[in-house]
Image 1 (cartoon, rainbow over the protein chains, first blue to last red):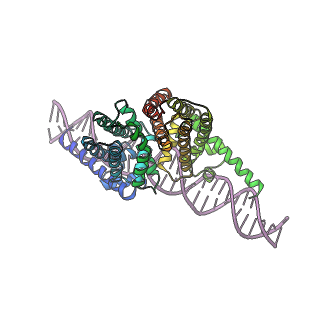
Image 2: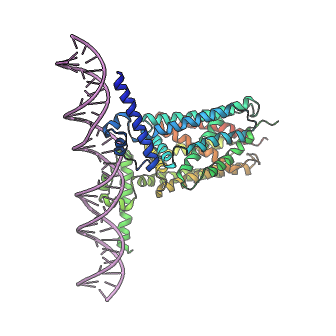
Image 3: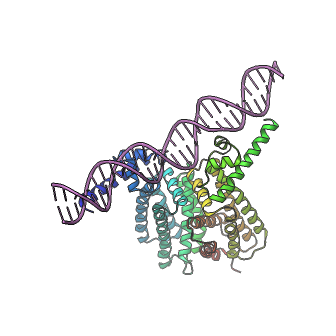
Length: 206
Length: 206
DNA sequence: CGGTAAAACTGAACGGGTTCAATTTTTATA
DNA sequence: TATAAAAATTGAACCCGTTCAGTTTTACCG
């Protein structure tokens, strides 16, 4: 592959990605037709399919950019010196939820999750799942960090607890995007309530 | 509405439901075309859409029959005298999982969940969500039952813990149906591991 | 350069879920 | 029973994601 060809390819890839994210945000995922995306990117429909396996893969590209940011924000938090399990969890989970609607609408999240479940063999679905696992691992890391510093009981399995808590966070997020009425504060409050018993029980008594 | 019309309607409804479930089980959800379902039921495509809003609603009708059975099995279990939190949870969750593939394939579950997330405003999606909530409530009821009998600590919020545990059960089930390799025993083992810390911590010390 | 193989591009055609205007069947009324 | 209104049915047409055979562009080599 020589310079010209590679450059054209990179350029088209960027134009298609930009056109898609613009349209997804403007008119929503369903209403954004491949024909429109292709036209806005200045390519044909066929070429679109040369760059992305299908419409869902296109969306996943947007989603993964979003989640990467959330992961980075979470890493920053784990480095800090937190001294309360409930508060630490609320803060990490709060970051997840606060970030979630920055680039993606509820409809886009619904579509992304829907596709990741319905077509698990597509590359971007696998990527989505991988991102989920990294988020899950981050919650586990938080528990381990707190345990190392004596905030969490020594006899608690941090991975098990972290996965449990994260899966609840994730499931509640699904409920959130399914319900157009629900707002982020309500979501946070519910999850904090659900986490409270675990936070209390795993805490090391002074 | 007079007798003849009502009877015809009920009859057609049954024929369509039967044709759809038969085809979904035989060739899978995606491969079963509306045209085929309609033909097998002896009606036209247009009539199919008079009875079901869309193909997804059709599948949800099958799913809800399945979940109703699981709920009944769970109720039976809660009535029994169990004396160990971990074992009680494993048994209830085991019933859920064991039942799950009786009528529905992984593909059908994936599609059902995918639709319930992707099109939350459809009637059957709402029904699916309602079924989920009943399952969640059943786990809460189990915790409460154990608490009443002194197996679970008095200071534990049974609803919060039950919801947390159920949401994990549900999320793990999603992972399960996404992964064609994973079997039910593996799923049960993972969830048991995740539940272990909670089961230990909420247990009343003798 | 000229020729050719490979890569990229194209858009018309295809497939299957969904819609809807026209038709048929049933019910209600006189 | 005749007639009109209402309900139910029909299937051809529509929409949109996806495919693929044919065309154009680029890269490589003598």
